[in-house]
Length: 66
Image (cartoon, rainbow, N blue to C red; front, top):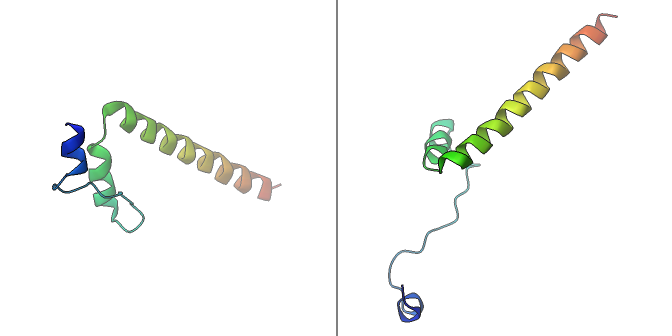
């Protein structure tokens, strides 16, 4: 695009995407549109959070039993 095309742009400018008000299916569909590396990053973060929760639940359950 030339500077003139940008300044006089008449197309639709992309809007910011927020997922807080979207259903889980819509969120997954948005993630599927990302590049593979970005998808891997998101799922790595989710895996880490789920693992942390399992350890926390396990710890709380077993400490409560003492």
